[in-house]
Length: 435
Image (cartoon, rainbow, N blue to C red; front, side, top):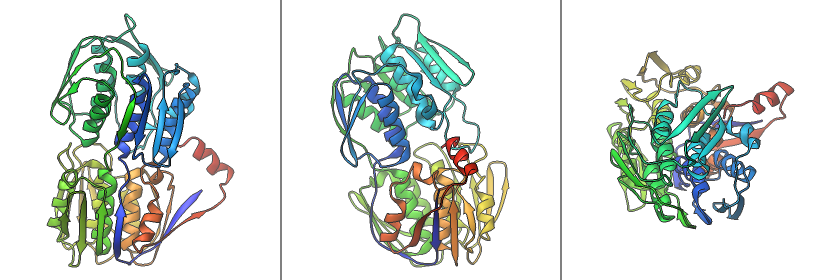
């Protein structure tokens, strides 16, 4: 089992290249099941979530071949339903996108309830509402989700989401791509990776319009053809490196980004006295002055992303004054706060609000990653803390960050991954891990 050991207090300097977007990849790989031909996916992040999803497709009969580390050819012409995938679908949240892709491809679906990071209740009621509107009968029992279209093919429908949901927007979009007729989905999420999924499907022959607005219109097509598609850069990975520079000081050029996607993060960092300079496909982050406090509220895009909330909290721990963080998306996403307190942070949580009193410095300590983005926050905190920080359960971090240790070392961070043999109990825990 790997751990990260960080000797903090070193400012970061240099240049780091951002990988393809995790949240786009985990939607596009299941969507590849709809393609009648070979699709080439480029700029794919080398992370455990993408590896698991590609393995799921292989277990269903797909041919998956790597052109290089970040480019893969996927041929799903021979796929079929299989219960061999259940052990993997239980271990990854994005496996619920298989419901939409299976229904779209076969007219029926069978998979497990998804896994994923446990930072609160994340119901799939809006997914189910959408599938039923498209003509599917859904049953859930004994940890399985089963669905079937009444006449073997989904049909277009009008769907209004009761709340803005990224997952439901993606799942319904995938399912409706090959449905018979026209689908209109209102009150949808607008995140960049939703636009990326629509662009991927359209490049393969789909007819999807409105992605990036609050209404998406889909005219179902008979088939999708093969093609090539390159994923957008990862907004959250870029934001994580931005917060790392803000926390430690220094100056880093972050390349292969879309600056417009980072505006909500850049705005908050500027409020904290961090300098952000934008180019066509890069941002330069520089911090020379003491950090100032600010207030943050997470919201659906284009608001401040919930996936950046733990990382900016780690930065605010040593900003001058009192900051207030309000979580507007997920319940119970402040579980990581207890880990920051081990490092000397002064944070009070009440419901969906955290009050952060800035301290002079954080102190290195043994901590754990309790989910993907919480793990990233531990890294950010460790980089700016005095002394040594040891982070356990880094399997969570590696769900969403490609070569984070190597990239940080190239910027001057003193961070290493240390492998230790698993005890039998730890082996069992890893086998049952939800991530």
